[in-house]
Length: 230
Image (cartoon, rainbow, N blue to C red; front, side, top):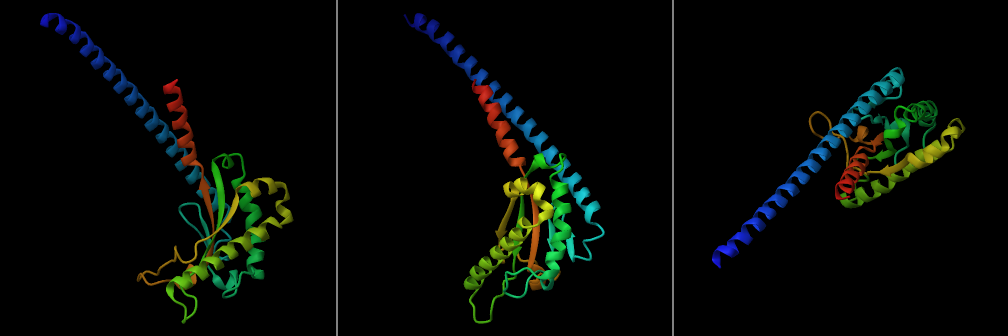
């Protein structure tokens, strides 16, 4: 009787072991495919970033210095001079910055909406940034909140001005879908070489490219999972 029970138990044990091995192979195969997909997307993002960075550098190399602007390694274009952008505490764009935008934005939009790049772009974000200062009698939290309103309204003012440019009429649909405005207050304030706050450079406007690399990776991973389950 004992021998009979063992003869039935051993095949069941072998079956469970076999099933476990199959599940492990499926899981390993899935993880490998996800890893390969992630690698491809990251490589594509890096190539797009490098190509767009070179294209931006080529397009604006002659202008950045005169605009007191700089092109960062993450494809962000930063406008640094607070005396050109807005008056202190104001959300009204100064004439000098309006002239810069009239020159900069049509060329910028033409570049990022080219067939080579637009498929990889999730949004172009106009970022408003401030220093940590407000007034001598204002506590730190209140200053941060007031600067949050100020930075958001400045970014919004830049967006509204851009939307009103007749030179962008043919790109209006894309711009409305992809151009956004965000205020960061002093949360990303810049510092000098001695690590002290750089109040002047912190008061800036940036145009930042946000790619859809994360969305691509998630979409492909979901498709792989769906196919594996199917």
